[in-house]
Image 1 (cartoon, rainbow, N blue to C red):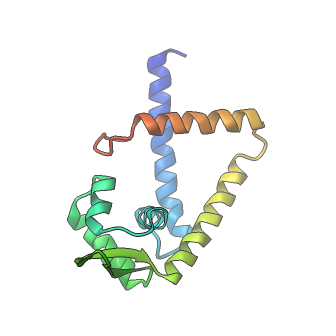
Image 2: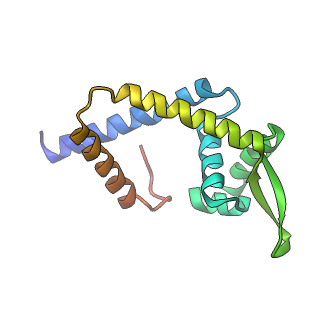
Amino acid sequence: MTADAAVETIQREMTAFARRARASAGRMHPELSLVSYTLLGHLEEVGGCRATDLAAHYALDKSTVSRQVAALERAGLIERRTDPEDHRVQVLHLTGTGTEILAQVTRSRRVAFQERLTGWPEEDLARFATYLLRYNAASADPAEPEG
């Protein structure tokens, strides 16, 4: 396989992966789209942040993030808290329900990945993980278009 053919295959397969991920998100939890899952995961990872920080991190329009945040608030998955260092700033945090649902969906996603990767030799799994880390590190610019 030539390098051009390999890149084309990678692009096609990553696009298929992204489509499946978006489609399966609703099956994991009806209130949690892939975008919502991603935002909740980031809030958990960083221990809370401002909506503008989410927009900057994911290179999204502030209005897009605002709609997502409003939906997550209505669902009771996140809450706003006043920043103790600057009372003018509202910081988004997961609620207890948000933490539980995120953990539930994360477990379901992990099981789905484990099922898909059953039978892969450990060396292949390690190589695949290394390649994904390398790819994501090289595409750290959130403004870069993806398939």
